[in-house]
Length: 311
Length: 305
Image (tube, rainbow over all chains, first blue to last red; front, side, top):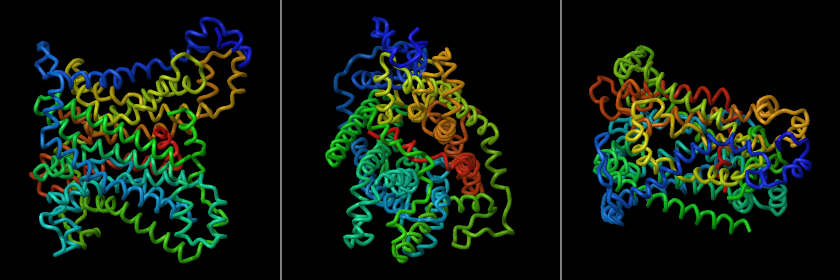
């Protein structure tokens, strides 16, 4: 049909009819993207709607084939979740995580990307070194961190009497910061490469005029590099916050199920515990919806701030 | 999120990031500054690599030694005993097979359906294209974890797909970041190419297969590498829907070992580290082999708004 028309212009003319208005000039595009559209509908759109629906209804897992009424309960699930101290604690833990992880990630990855950008030799080596934790499974590196940071681990034997007691991963004070350090360490390589790409778009003339004006390395970093990579910083902050909202593997494995005594639980861990283990999927869905709304609000604020800075 | 804003992120060719920058200002950097930079990079590299080194050394050490001396291999104590220990508990070949099927299924779906969708989004005008693209960008900020309860209800309870590879693969089947990468690469091809193909009477599928696809081979490699680390490293989802040990991917099997079984073995950390080495090796090796193609411009642009 329209696809065999030889050039762009004539294609537009020949396919300008009603058909093209309804399905577009190349309706085969619908066919080619259909599997992906179905995938999005089945795996994202429908579950998303289902989660919202579930959070306003009473919903329990039942034996296969058994039909149980799922009456609407209004805001009850939200009420019971938001008055549950464990849930509120888990959100507070994410707050602690973000307070440590976000500044640490932004500063370390920008500084290391700047250093890497100036390095002439061994760039490939450094790139690989920084990126290896990012491509490795959390489960695998958690194994090493458990070995390094347990009570009798290497870190404590180096620290000797300075080692905290109880040790890092079983201390209610250190458990959450340790998770934040772990994630910072694991994700940093990704953010370094992100900044490295952003640095390529900072005009070289700005550095030259800064150095003509007598600015030192620190001054030109602060007044040229930092504002120059501002959009990338917005992205880094957003992605780091999304990571915080998603914590599961780390509290589950690194601190043994959000321990000690619930000191490092995360909302996703509670979604798992309430939804799957305690058969309260409706409340778990409510936690998920709250978390998603928070993430979207933060994304909106972040976008607003980044765009305002660009103007 | 406009398409323009997103594509701005990929204006940079992948290779450009790896190239040394020798701008005028760099050459004028004082030697002290440069040494400070290199020292910083070396310290960071040590912090990133040491745990991996320690993982490998620990996995071959028969008796654990957590003193500083233990960070260096003691040649009299090297053995494969940790590997045989973890294998006797987990059936490593079976776990690797499960990981392989899970990852392979995702890769296959992503490459086939992702290329089709990426091509359609980049080069074809059809109703709803804007909508599909908006959805593609939006779902990158909706974390998968938040959908886990409804997905669990649907896939494990309603469809009865727990302990099956299909159930494992389904939520990950088409990697949206890969679709995005395909789209970006197809967009960069010149329009004349497609016009010429149409003059010659080639249909869309034929144009895609014999003209467009060979030109975006780097995108294919990037997308495959990027997609690989998703399911290979994934823990939460396969953990939720597999209860039978013979279906569990290695990441899940190892995690269960860490949280349940480890305390009952003579050298628990040794066995954990051996499992960790096996789990980490494929991703690390693939990445080192193809590291030039694996850059943040592609990864990051997917969520750039």
